[in-house]
Length: 167
Image (cartoon, rainbow, N blue to C red):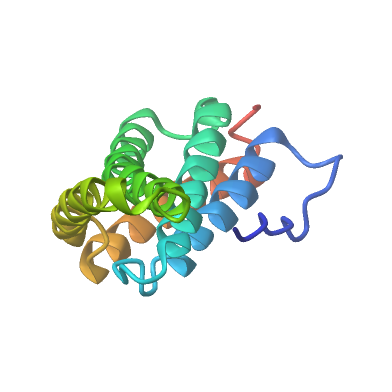
């Protein structure tokens, strides 16, 4: 899993609102970075990394909620949650398959067929969850999320720099 990026320019003496803008901007960028090839079933770590990135973004947005205009913040947060939920559906199957494959390596020949039946069913579910994930990670949808977050961040940054945001 990829580590969270450092927040460039984050200073202890700047306003909470400017810190919010910096953190949310970086965390949103991480979500997009991890979206590349996320639908590749052969590498479940991509889904995991993107899911973790959405959870980091969500946490930052929730912590810094007072710094953002309510409606744009609520819309963007709702979208982040929807993406995270879709990633979670796929990730659950990835984890179950990995665990069952590990278990299968240690079972005797008598149990191998039963385990294989379960693996086939889980792989079908994984493919279905992957198909359901497609619209959530579509380039246009992620670009729209990025645009919403960027606008929200820029509004907060302008307000803080103008002295209009006390948070």
